[in-house]
Image 1 (spheres, helix red, strand yellow):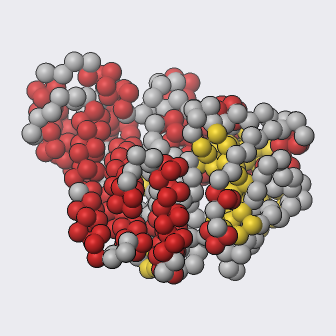
Image 2 (cartoon, rainbow, N blue to C red):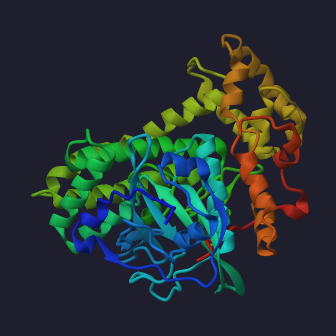
Image 3 (cartoon, helix red, strand yellow):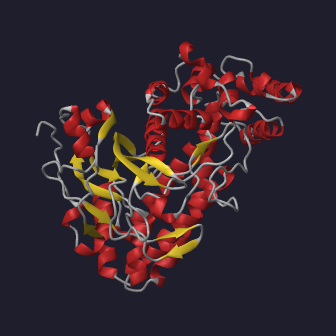
Amino acid sequence: MSLHIPFDNTFARLAPHFYSPQLPEPVKAPHLIALNQDLARMLQIAPGEIPEMAEVFAGNVLAQGAEPLAQAYAGHQFGNFNPQLGDGRALLLGEVLGQDGKRYDIQLKGAGRTPYSRQGDGRAWLGPVLREYVVSEAMHALGIPTTRALAAVTTGETVWREGGMPGAILTRVAASHLRVGTFQLFAARGQTEALKQLTDYAIARHYPDAKGPMGLLRAVRDAQAGLIAAWMSVGFIHGVMNTDNCSISGETIDYGPCAFLDEYHPEQVFSSIDRMGRYAYANQPSIAVWNLAQLATALIQQLEDPQDGVEEATAIIHAMPSLIEVEWLRLFRRKIGLVTVDSGDLDLISDLLERMAENQADFTNTFRALSGGNARAEFTDPAAFDAWHTIWKQRQQAEQDSKAVMRATNPCFIPRNHRIEEMIAAAVANDFSPFHQLSKILAHPYEEQPDAVAYRQPPKPDEVVRATFCGT
């Protein structure tokens, strides 16, 4: 086999109750859609011939050193605790050490049934695979911590959802697939030794300077605070922030019904399964705090007297909202070209956002236009922008390189929902050129790219995407 993946596995060395060994289910006729060459090089993977890579990334052939397994975890789903979830359609093939010296999981998503599939088929259809490939790589290019996409293949088989859909498998790369729900599983079972082992493993892998369970909690808090602020700064809505989708590493994980804002509205919801707006754009900071509280509840179960950890854990959790706000304010200052700090900055930014919401202003285009463009044209009532603009220019006088700061912070291009749907529709019809074109443009989101100006445009009325779907 010319394809070589330098596996160096550690999770598979843990006790059997952390996972279930499971081989992928072979597929009929795998075809390679894309291989992320830059990521493959970083992971020190030696690519092989295209048919061979299609077989490996479809799960038909195991690369040497792979030890496929389905991870076990629990989780709160829309606030309701499910004591047994786990990888129902994903398999961890193993881990590699990248050129950066860091450890990464390589996982097949859509590889068939596992002991945790319940009534599911363990498969994925093409749409969600391409959505996650494009959006996760776009998030990486935006500079936001995220899982990444190594490869995508079609399977030559039909997956049945509302109707028959072409099957596909995504190869996902992550710093790890440890979740808040992983800790919740063993806490709920009262398996304190397993919880201690998991805690030690997470610390060694992600936060070697952390001291004990509360040190881990503090490190995860800080990582998640930075992540959520970064989401908010680009108008990203995860859509399903369940605790089983909250990564210990602080990466964005599980791009099911995710979406980006077009018009700015703080209560925007796209996810078809979020009927009560629990995970709306503006709710994401408070949900992140709620999720961390669930991690705290799980972690303290391993202490000899859990009550001993309650006070410290409570203090750690209560500090999180201000941490998110500090990072949010830093990022949004940069979005309007401010590096120095002024006590009125929060009011200045909030005033702009309120005016944007009232005037149906496009989130991405408005902020980008502040560094050179016609931002007032984004407002239904341009006078609403003019009033804010006067105050902003006065505040900006003390700044240097303001335009450069804004251009490095405000992207020209995001994965707009209607472009994602357009790309998926074409791929279902066996035309992958929109997928490749969109991927190419989104790899450089802060560059003007004059030939791609159409991809900066918000949707026309008949192109507006009102709901996004998980795909399971």
